[in-house]
Amino acid sequence: MMRFAPTPLRRFCQSEEGTMLIPFAIWIPVFVMLIVSSIELGTVTIRHTVLERSLDMAVRDLRIGTGADTHDALREDICERASVLPGCMTSLQLEMIPLNMAAWTDPPARADCVDKSEPFTPQRNFIHGGGGAVMMVRACYKFRPVTPISGFNAQVAKDDDGYTGIVSTAAFVTEPS
Image 1 (cartoon, rainbow, N blue to C red):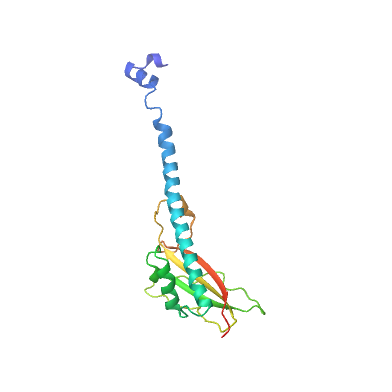
Image 2: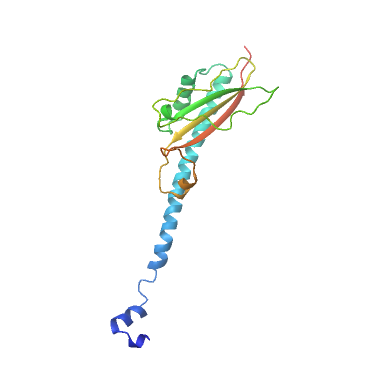
């Protein structure tokens, strides 16, 4: 059938130049998505690790009675230690919940996070227990993903404004007074 085709068309069909273009065009988006997702996952991991460490250090001070005991002071203490978290003071919400070990009830499953669509998010669960009380502190940090196109972002839960959250939890027993 090719013998009846015009000469330029026959030469084009028999030429092997540019044969790598099709596999390149198929595979390059996969590798770009992999690289971008790796960057996003690395950023989330760093932010979560820094939040965990900052919360642990602040709770350590709180446990022995030398740390901040109000919501705003504790948030400021955590944000000072977590310089990697952009907009920490406006995006971090804390909960302090007393845990009754004798009559156990599960703490709320969902963390109390900042509502970025509202100009102000009220502080709800922040009850400082007395001496010997078992307390749970939960920190929720909301942030926008670094890259909106990564495959990792498609799987992460986001709110209506495109923010996602990371939650860190710490528990401690306050020193008796």
